Image (cartoon, rainbow, N blue to C red; front, side):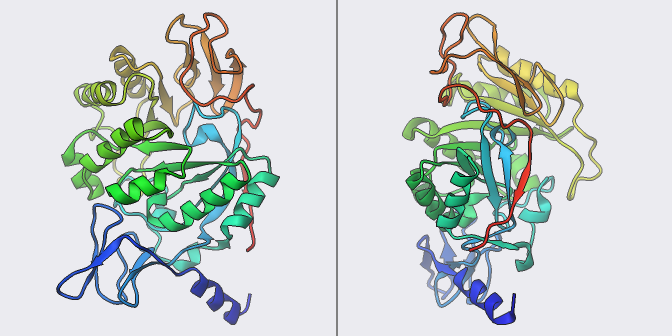
Length: 367
């Protein structure tokens, strides 16, 4: 690609946004997320992709991605949303949190525009998803909150072709953009990183309450199917007491049918000195959640046949058996009821399970 074409594409990637206002001192405040970055001309927000340009906040990565890949939907993780089906996944660069334990740091912490090697218009992306047989497109790898405008336009294009949309997010967003964003999402996995304010501030430079607000909003004001994931980090958020409080809060505010995923930490980014999560810790977290009344609790990032399978909360039959991302047994009716006792399994099910399995297919998409 020549220099002229490269410059043209970069210019096309800059689009105006609407969640901002001018301050008396001449700076522009971004109102997309609770970080409220206050920027002067030419400055970028902490997320890297939103910038003050021409006295407004612009998105600088519209239509550009760090890469596209077809994954199993269970990898998001979503265990109750179109099980066994392929999802076209992509992200951009940057993030509005600063997690010291980030497991996608090469993308979310990137400050290099070269990270955005692939380009795709919303229409091209939706067309490729349909052509590859993907039932959904996932905004993932980094948080779609920060590429709000691009994600919504992709969702529009996908819905016109009958392709659903999935947000994999930390839920760190303000109320008005939250409401607009989730009008266009069919499913979400929300990363509830811990259940203490100290953890959020010390390890993410964010706050807990906006994430809880997002979860309550999703449950009580939308039809979005969502599941919750907590990365269990030894010595940081793995105490029985904290996991118990988290599960009790979910029961009280979200109800028993919202699935919880407890995933294993591995040393990464700025926490290389912390050991991996022992499988026994995940088993205990799952047990605490189940004893609290949560009907669907899972372990992740470990090989655990029991902890990865879905069990009927009424009769105890395994209704979906999983071996990593491969479905080994399917005991649900087409409308999602237990084949043994007829009890509905919470989720979004459309007939028999898909057969995508654990395959991972990298995809190149041109404009």
